[in-house]
Amino acid sequence: MPEAHCEAPTAGSVILAGILLKLGGFGFIRYSLCLFYEASAYFAPLVYVISCFGVVYASLTTLQQVDLKKIIAYSSVGHMGIVTIGIFSLNTPGLMGSVLLMISHGIVSGALFICVGLLYDRYHTRTIKYYSGLMHTMPLFSVFFIIFTLGNLGLPGTSSFVGEFLVLAGCFQTNFGVAVLSASGMVLGAGYSLWLCNRILFGNLKQTSLKIFYDLTRLELYILLPFVFLTFLVGIVPEMVICFLNSSVAVF
Image (tube, rainbow, N blue to C red; front, side):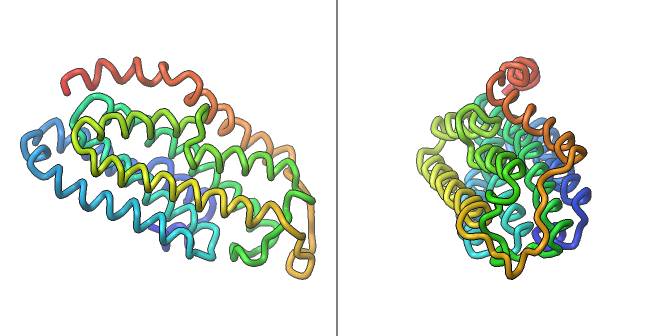
């Protein structure tokens, strides 16, 4: 998936992160749990092991990447590992949290890929070492990028927080060790998210590699505003989604 994101255009990355990446979770919920519940319960420990490895490994790998798209792509791998843990918790909080986290990830990750695409359109590079101090020349872009970064790490008030909290609550009911590993993955996620934000927005401006400086256009602003609205709407009023899901997950 990280390689696919690097080769895809911005629109392709948004579709891949926002829609196609959720088909695996949809398949687990729709088919594994609904049609093969006993088999899902039997193989849940194996899925826990694979998911925990994926969460920790993807988070550690993200810290070593130099391509902006690969950083966001590997963070998506970690988030989807948390989603899988929530699904195979086989209880209502874990299942609702996984669905909320998939919705949130589609919003936040898609917005981050758009931000990276805007930088690539301006400077024609995604290598992180060429970026620094964008806060001085692109303050409006920096505000949006900080908001989406905070949403990606699960800050309270953003959409990811509710999903991650419910996943942890559901996982604590079934396996304490897996819940601890999932929480450690979230801590690592906060680490690489803040590292990325600090690396490209703050510090001294690298005028040797970046020659043209201009902030968001009106069209780009209108593209990013709905993502900000949805990020805070789902985080502040999660009852909209939870009430809709209650009837669907009552069977579990």
